[in-house]
Image (tube, rainbow, N blue to C red):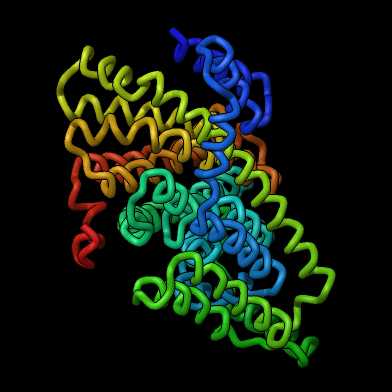
Amino acid sequence: MLVVVALLVLLATLVIGVPIPLAFLTSAGSICLLGGYDPAFLMIFGFNKTNSILLLTIPLFVLAGAIMDKGGIGEKLISTVEKFVGKAKGGLGVVTVVACAVFGAVSGSSSATVSCIGSIMVPRLKENGYPDGLIGALLASSGVLGILIPPSMLMILYAWSSGESVLACFLATVVPGMTLVILFSIVNLIYAQKNPNIKVYDHAIAAAQEKEAKKALKQKGTSAIPALLMPVIILGSIYGGILTATEAAALSVIYAVPVGILYYKRINGGILKDALVSAGETAGVIMAMLFSVQILSRLYISENLPSMILGFLTSISDNKYIILIMVNIFMIILGMLMDDCSATILAAPILLPVVTAIGISPIHFAAILGVNIGMGNVTPPTAPLLYLAGRISKAEVKDMLGPDLALICFAWLPTLIITTYVPAYGMLLPSLLGYV
């Protein structure tokens, strides 16, 4: 009964717009009040759980993403991708998808990916005839690649809350992430072929514009090589066993700052200060959220919520695949209601005991969770990432719905089904590299 009341309190506070950390604490407070739990013990527990060196990774990757955005590194990544995949009709849409994947390989954040790549690509896409609705929907779904292509902030949080290997969790979402890159690109190309207003990207004009820009900015670095080396160095150091995820996050900042200041010459003291403040604010929000959700999840587990969920699901069906469908629906709804970080740290401790009880590996579940939460973030009616992309592209929600549903039906759902029901799919790279 306590859990039911707490869940109703949580849902009610989220619906009326209470900030997520406060909504979690309100739900936890209802259990403490009715169940006689000691708040002092819970405060100590929350502090001890968040006192982890691994969590330093989050503000460092947030800072690296902000520096990349302001330092011109993201723009150079895009210009390089354009040369390889931007030549056909609809090619700029493919550039957007691939650029989000590459940028996500450093920033680890979906919102940072949407903001950085969107600010650069939206004007180009509009100039070449892409409708606002398609731009917003494509940018939203592509931005989710920031939490699937490692290093992923989502997988760091999942590994921290589940006690699994960070590298194994990183690798679990790579194949689903690359599948989505291909499927997003195909859906975009189909839209482009059917829309006569979408023009072929004129590389001659682009080259002339770039040449003029180089003349105007002779003192600034124009090569994309330093920008391209960044994801290679970061990911190579992690997978080569040279650095931990936290050390690699620090390296991303150490690399981005001098490249942005000395080579691209786009960062000054004021911009660096803004990036530091932004990273601090984001990290503060995440840490407050982690603290509150750890208290709430501890109370849920003390009240035996995972066993209650498992009992409820098995009362409907004892078929493993039917249970997975219901778990997927639950996580998609979480992703619709909350941002990706909140949904992950709430779902992981509660659902992990449920899925392991039916024979699902924690690493396999990492891939399932990543795809689910990402899909929930772009699924109407709430779709937090879809609204962010809409603000950046200045697209109306009604115009984004058609392309968004097409991406969900022909990209997200096939990827989710394969990831859920073919364990070898998400487990391929972790198995090959000996993490499972």
